[in-house]
Amino acid sequence: MKFSVSSLAVLATCASTSAFAPSNVNVNINVGSQSQLNAKNTFFQSIEEGVKGAAAATFLAGAIWASPAAMVSNDAISGSHLLNLNDNVRSSIVADAKEMASGSGSRVNKDAESLLRLGLPIPKDKDVRKFVVVAEEIKQDIGTKRKAAAIDGIKKTKSTLKSKSADFTKMCRDTNECTSIIADMTALLDPMDAAMKDAQNFFNGSDQERKVLDDAYAGYDKLQKLMTALEEQMVPKGFVTPVPSDYNDLPQLRGGRATVEFVLNKPDGGEFNVEGKLFPTAKMVMIIDGYTAPVTGGNFVELVDKGFYNNMKIQRSDGFVVQTGDPDGVAEGYTGGTPSKSVGKGKHGERLIPSEIFCKGDKGPFYETTIEDEGRGGEATVLPFSSFGAMGWARDEYDANSGSSQFFWLLFDSDLTPAGKNVLDGRYPVFGYVVEGADFLRDVKEDDIIVSAKVTAGIDKLVLPK
Image 1 (cartoon, helix red, strand yellow):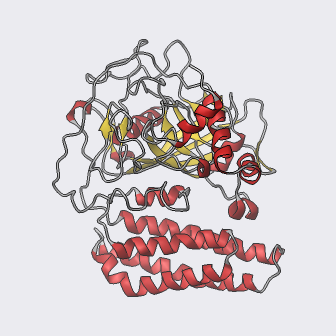
Image 2 (cartoon, helix red, strand yellow; image 1 turned 30 degrees about the horizontal axis):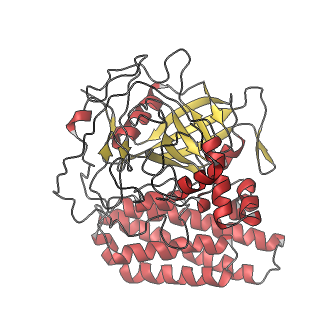
Image 3 (tube, rainbow, N blue to C red; image 1 turned 90 degrees about the vertical axis):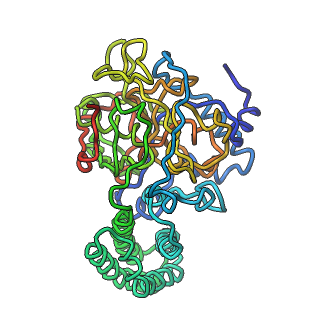
C-alpha cells in the first residue's frame, strides 16, 4: 500500500495512523566536548533550519513511510488479553497520566536517562519531581551555554538537597544508602558551580571555556546517575509489574532493569566515524526496562544471555532505524524454547512475543493489541520513542503479535513527531534506551557485525518459564 505525501503528513501528526514497523535507537557518547555539548543529527538540523511546521512534518512523514516496513513474521495469533489489574500496593505509585507526558508542553523530553527515571514506579511526590526537574535543567543550560541559569540551577539543587534530604531518605528502601547518595550528589555541586563561574570569565568558543564546560558536563553526568540511584531506591520493596498468567510460559524481566552491552565491528576492519572522530569498535550500553516491558524486556535479555545476537549482522540501516535480530535461514526470529500457548508460534517455528504497551496512568501494560485498537490513540506511553536510540520491538506491520527476536534502534529527531502524536508510540513497544554510545548509531551500517552482546547487570531479574 502506498500513501501520498500529503496524506502522510496527516498520518504522522495524528494518533489514528497505521502501524509502522521500523527498528532504531540513539544515545549520546562522550567523544569530545562538541559531541557532549552540541550533539546534533546534521540531517535533521538542516531540516529544522530549512523548513518549519507542517512542511517539516510532511517531509519527515514521507521519509519514514517510504522506508520498507520490517517484516518479522506473517503468522498471527489473534486475540486480546487485557490485564486484570490488582490494585494492591499500586494506587500510590502509578504516575499521573497527564504528568510529564513527553509529548506535552513546549519541549519534547529526548533525554534517555530522564525518561527512564520518569518510568520508575515510585510514589508521587512533588518535592522529588521538582528537584529532579530543576536538576535536569542544568544539563540543558550547560549545553546551551546559559551559564547564569546553570549556576542558579546548581544553587537550587544544592538547597533542595539540604532542606529535603531527610524527607527523601524516608522514602528509600535503604535509608543509609540514600544518605550516602545524597552526600555524593552534594559533593559534586561545588565543582560544577566553580566550573560554570569560570566559564563566565572566558571568551565564547575559547579552549578555556570548552574545558570548564566539559568539566561541568562531566559533573552533571555523575549527578544524574546518582539521581537515578536515588529514585530507584524509592521503588517499593518487592515491586513487580503485574503480568497476566497467560504469559508465564515466556521469559520475563521482573521487578527491575537490566544493563546490556553491545560491541560492533565493521566487516572490513574499518572504523566508525562519529562527528569526525574514528573508533575501531562501537560500544553501546543499554538499559532494558522490566517495569514497563517485562515480557519484551525479558525475551530480549534471555536472548542476549544465550548469545543469540553474537556475531549477527546489522540487517537494516536506512537513516531512520537500525535493525537486527533476523537469524540465518528461513526463520525470521528465535526458534528455540517452547512457544507460548497464548501467542503461539510463527510459520517457521519462531517463538512469538505479544505486543506489550504501557500507557501513562495505567497500572500495567496491555497485551496483544495496539493503542489504536484500544481506542486510545494520542495517549502517552510510559516510555516513548522520543529519545535518539530508543529501542523498539519489530514485528509484521499488520500483526501486533508477530515479534520474535528482531528489534530496532530509532534514529530520527523527535521534535517533528512528539510522543503520542507519531506513528510509533503505542504501536510498537519501547523496552529500553541506549544510555552510552548512541552516537555510534549514526555510522552503523548494514552488515556491521555484533561481535559481542552480553548482560552486564540485572540478570537476576530474569525469570524463565518453569
